[in-house]
Length: 306
Image (cartoon, rainbow, N blue to C red; front, side, top):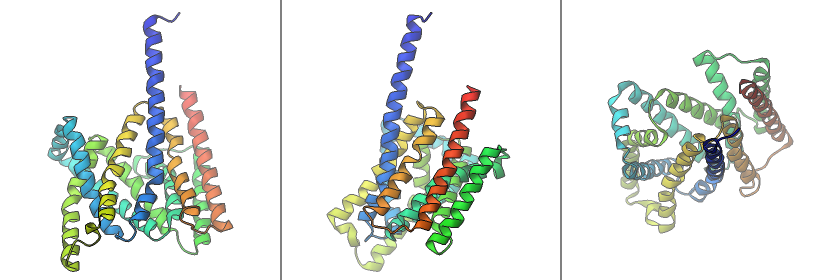
C-alpha cells in the first residue's frame, strides 16, 4: 500500500522527468539548429568565429558561475595538476571540434558534419574498448561493423575519405573521454577550457586587426551581434544538458542525442541545398541501422538490469 510520502515522491520524480525531457528536447533542438548561426557568419571566417565564440563563452559561463557562487569549483580545478592536465587536452580537442564544425558549415559540408555526429556514439564505444578495456557483445560488434561499412560507403559517395565526419567524431569522442577523467562540472569545465583558450583567441584576433588595419566585420552591428550570440548559444545547451541528464534515464538521453544530427541533416538538404546522391543516402541508412541496433541492445540490457 502506497503511503502519502511515497505518492509525493513519485509525483516529484514524474515532474522532474517531465521537466528534464522538455529541457533535454530544447537542448538538442538548439544544438541541431546551431549550423544556422554559423552559416549566417560564414563571411567572418572559421578561425575568427571560434576565437569570438571562445571569448564570448568565457564571459557568459563566468557570469553564470558568479551568480551561482560556484567559482570555487574553477579554483579547485586549476589547483589540481591532474585535472588541469586533462582540461588542457580537452580544451585543445574542443577547439579542434569547434573549428572543424564551423569550417564544415562555411564550406557547405553540413551533411558530412551530421554524419560525424551520428557515428560519434559508436566512436565512444570504440574508445571504451581500446582505452578502458570494455567488452562488447555480438550485437554491439554488429553495430560497429555496420558503422564501418557506412563510413566506407560514405567515402565512395563523396569521392574521398570523409575526414570531416571522422574528425568530428574522434575529437568529440576523445573530448568526452578526457572530460570524464577531469573532476569538474560541465559549466565549470567549460569555463576552464575557454579560459585556457582565451589567450590564443585574443592573440589571433589582435593579429587579424593589425593585419587588416581595423576590426573588420566586428564593426558591422549585425555580424558583431551574431558573434556575441555564439557565447549563449554555446553555454545554454550545455547547462540544459547538465539539467536534463540529472533527471532522465541514460536510455532517454541516448535517444535524444540523435535529434541534433537529424536536424542538421535536414538543414543540409533543405535550407543549405547540399546535394545527396543515392550512395551517400545508403551510408546514412546504414548508420541509422547501426544506431538502431546499438540503441535496442542498450535498452534491452538496461531493462534486464533493472
